[in-house]
Image 1 (tube, rainbow, N blue to C red):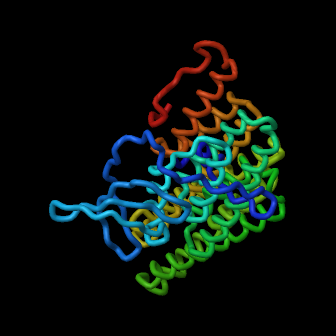
Image 2 (cartoon, helix red, strand yellow):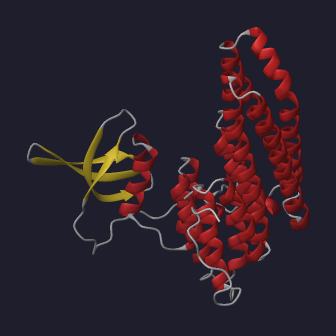
Image 3 (spheres, rainbow, N blue to C red):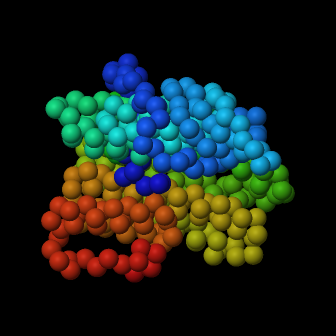
Length: 364
């Protein structure tokens, strides 16, 4: 799931602070029903269907069917693709306790399987409620999540995966900010801005190679003040991320960032009207429109997350709706809106009928 709610619980690796829970036991229950065939993929590219008979920590006993016959053999988990390792583990011994879910979350986290890690961290938090002292156990899960998420942000930046890095940082600063220092968040934000700038420069170089020198110089001169406005918005968003624990300040800064992006786009539209036949300029502005829309939606969802943390669901919905006005088809905004409505209903709500549940893809 791409929204912050499932990701909130999904991201983790407590490193030295979190107590190392033992891996889940993987013994075949005596009353287990007949094994069903599941597809698996090996690291060398082979794929096949197998029955999982039993297992231990690092190996599973499988039955493979070939030409009307079958063969039973042990296979090391390390020989399989990460997704196959996970399905083999949960097939042979589905986790049920806090320790089992937490241990499996750590293993899938090491394998960089976001979805399974999310599920088992969420289940670990829920299972902790059945323990004698749930609070410290749940704190371990959250600390694990923050540490693991910092690793993912670092790896995403190093690999040049801009959107992935932005998503993970948003989860970190809006849901786990108490487990990550402000300086660390700001450092991530700066590196993401540097990556964005580097990628934009690369795209510009490609576009500029196709333009004549005179045309390029003219367009760059006209685009310079527009890009300056966007940089103002980016600076305000960095400040907003740094102040994620200060709700009033972070939402105000997000609003200022959106205003800067809107001002940049207003100037861009004026420039287009002044040069309607300049196709090279139109190409530049089309790319700029995408960048401004992505930044504006990101700022709106950050503010919505901040208001949700304070249980101010009314304001959170207004921020989400601002994002949907910018991009009615944004999946993150749609999912966040539904999540806020559910959370608000569980908390008592605004009162029946206060706000209608509308199709978030419809412009108002």
